[in-house]
Amino acid sequence: MKLFCAVTVLVLASLLQDGNAVLKKEFRTLLPFSVDEFLLGYRWSIAESSILETGGGEGVQIVDDRTVDGKEEGDLHYTHRILHLETKAPPIFSGLAGGLFKVHEKSWLASSGATTQYTEKRIMGDEFEMEIRSKFIDGDDCQTEGVLSQSGSAEVIQVDFTAGIPAQQEFDPTQCASDQGPLTPGWARSGDRPQMCVYTYVEVNFGWEIMQLVEERAMGAYQAILKKFYGQMFCWADDWAGLSEKKVEKKEMDTKTELNRIRQEGEVRGQIEGVFPNYKRVVQSL
Image (cartoon, rainbow, N blue to C red; front, side, top):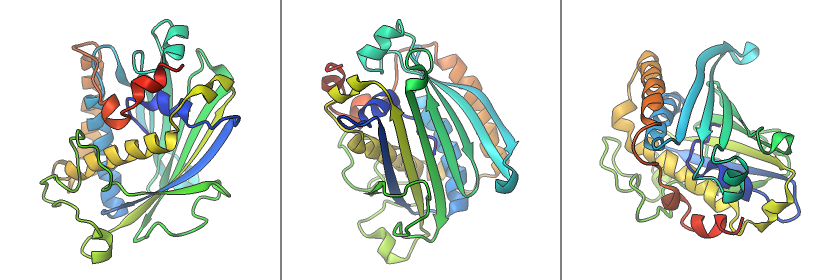
């Protein structure tokens, strides 16, 4: 699944554990939407969050955004984005890149799931690959095994996007005053809302042993990214709920134009420390 966040590169680096070049994890997130609602809200929120993370020469550039034939999967929503992360990358990367650190993200979104690939060829070449595969299941409680055949023996991490929200985070699903109403503890047990599960399998291949120096592990960072994005998506529901697919497509087209303009203006935007409070201490170790 598409994973936009200002700390993407730090997450890519810190996903590695000492001595391991490959890491596999499965994340499961329970959400108060039907899959149809989720697909519209997800695309709308990706566009909106990209704007919030872009400015001062950094952020998101949309290279391609179109529908492609996925054969047995039907139509797929394909996007190719470049994440400009010059000051947000660990110093070892931005230094080697001469201040021009870019991660390429290619994503294929279907009605049943998504695949997203991250690469950075200029510095790391074939030494780095990250792939994220997701499945969306209506009415599921995130306890189903074998949803992602690739996950195999991967560690399973349950993500509660309503818990452990940093005080400085703006979008808290337990506090926001949208028509959806704030979520209360145990919302899934009440049966008052639709529910679905996003099963997300993450695999990282990294050939640089220097990544062993990273002090923070990505499990906390990645969960924080998921919590932040899904919190935004829930709190923005008044803006996207009930929209037609054509209106969401217009939002995406308008965002592509807007990003090209604002990326060159103002200051660097994005809540790095709100997502990963120890960011500065960690990157200084690299």
